Length: 260
Ligand SMILES: Nc1ncnc2c1ncn2[C@@H]1O[C@H](COP(=O)(O)OP(=O)(O)OP(=O)(O)O)[C@@H](O)[C@H]1O
Image (tube, rainbow, N blue to C red):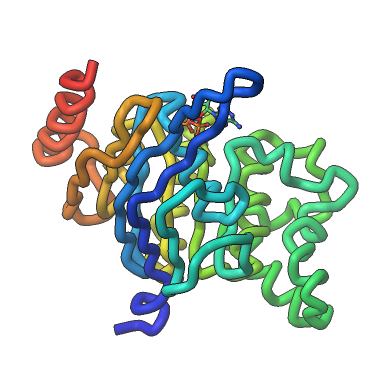
């Protein structure tokens, strides 16, 4: 087994996130008693309705939001701050790209911070700019790019830093259908090539089924948790028209209808 696959396991036990209402003092739970193990190298989907707490959970794994109680471990170490082993790809690339830097400078930013030598930076940025299909656009600034291209820059920048765990918060949600499909295909091939652990948040059942190996369903909030996990063993690339795909789609949709 690949070393990366053995590592980067995420253990979540009885995890809670609550907040206290100002002035009143009542305690409200966003997440209550979430239990989950995500294996290293796995492509895991967090699927749930709007406002159920998917982003909160992802940001807790990233180390951006602290837990209220329970355990959250990556590689057996309690998460209490962001780490180089984890990186987040956000829904809106605009807020994460530096507008005053070119595509290449944005992709190389983290490497520059790590003081990676210039030549090595160039090799790495070339690789990921190629991987996300942005060759020829290296010297453009974010304002000269389409939404899909900006999202590719964000992905290339995250990949250039080589985190073992990719945390993706509805990264293709704002893209048009065609660009979205292309990005989904690229992500699957990047994941298969790099063996990274991917946790991908979406509220779109079709997207969940196209991408993930396992799909964790979150209940409607407040006090959300993971109510079921579905295995998706269909081989890649997945065919939305196949009977197996549709059967799994209907099962998951039925699950949500029961919750209504
Ligand atoms: N600091 C906070 N104080 C109070 N409530 C909060 C806070 N942060 C988030 N919430 C609430 O927690 C819930 C979960 O929010 P979160 O953004 O994690 O959901 P989500 O499933 O990612 O939603 P969406 O799919 O719409 O992005 C929401 O009801 C939100 O209003």
